Image 1 (tube, rainbow, N blue to C red):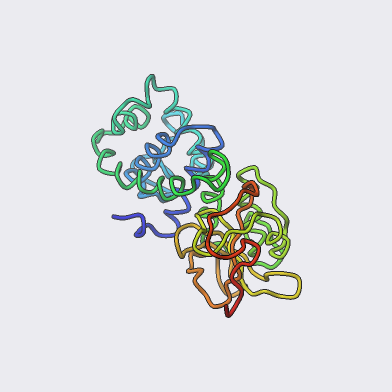
Image 2: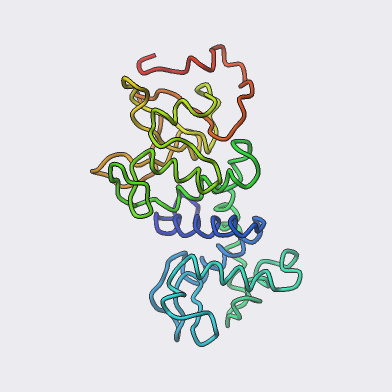
Length: 276
């Protein structure tokens, strides 16, 4: 299985695992162990049942002191519990993944976690590794992780989460999750960050569309070359899409200093306009 084969529920749960790890100040190795464990235990799904009294992402058991059924079925709670027990294992960062996971889970199949390590590592790389340079440190990964966690939620004009979003509400909240404050509407977000010439955009940059009287009318979040997460309109849910469209206006990089951008043969203040 590849990262691209994970569905929206699985990607969202992986992003949540990364986001909780970031909030706790844990290193990326913790996210890899947690995602590999969840892949083995539940295929990264918040399962309502399992073997005996096992529940949720990590198939935690009420009888083993993990919490009540309602708590275990809260992915945020379950992930925090997993990290709490993992980080109490002596030398956990130096252990092989299967041994670290088994120290937490105490599974009847202790070697079953190892085959998931490569996919877990690639998943963490997608959520964190490509974001270096947009804003300092681990903040960058939090922007991407937050947006991934919203995939599949409905569009609602004026909404800022947590259950629905419009386009700029989604991008504003994603940067808030990283500790970066940006304006509320797309036109103001366009004027907020340093502009980036087309071709130099990076994951975590904002991408804008449809220039209107006061500025662009739509915004998304770049997550990979040619790909973005955005809240399109009331007929569609938050989704992955291509940003290579005829109404593309340009890119900005919130949270970054106004440093010179690479020479692209055009002024950074004269980004690509529709039809040019």
